[in-house]
Image (cartoon, rainbow, N blue to C red; front, top):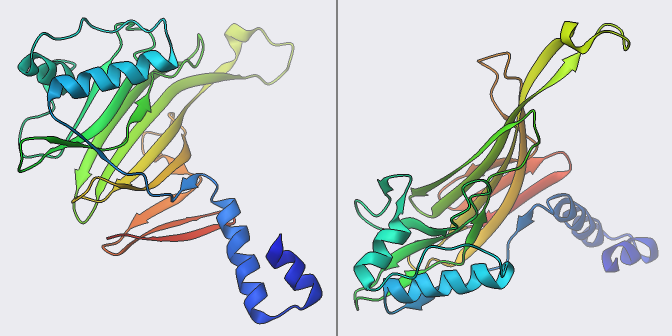
Length: 244
């Protein structure tokens, strides 16, 4: 608003540039560039309790596993998901607490990095839940972690669905063709490797035609990661976020 007023009163080149940048940032409203600090925990059991507290605070009826009796059990509970140990190999690890309700499968995920002092450095949490797309949808979720000059956490929640294509609106539905497609919501988080501070959080929407096996997901906003910056581009959205 300030830059728009400046443009109306005295349309300088500087005011024009700032107004254009403000409009691009508004178009990139899916991106949160605020720095979110990490925390530290003395033990895996302490981390388990903290995640459980956060989940119950959001939903008092949340059904969680029984609290582990010791640190090794807490580590196993947080690291193991779908019969796979996600704390194998070198850290950092993407771990989380999963509710017992297999239908919604809500999870609270964090990135964990052990410190030299034997404590756990922990990122801010990421929420995930199996999407509920309705009776015609097959929905699922997937979370992944990539390391490099930054830590990139991706959470994908998608639904395979179909719709009816009829030549006439009075046609019997059973005689109509089905059009299959996939709708996806992808959330990206970029963390500083040394501190696990969050520098970028963004949400993108994707769509693909499932009838064409070669049809890739087309996202409304493109995210390109270079060593020194993250670039967001899309309709009306151009944003560069410096990375450490």
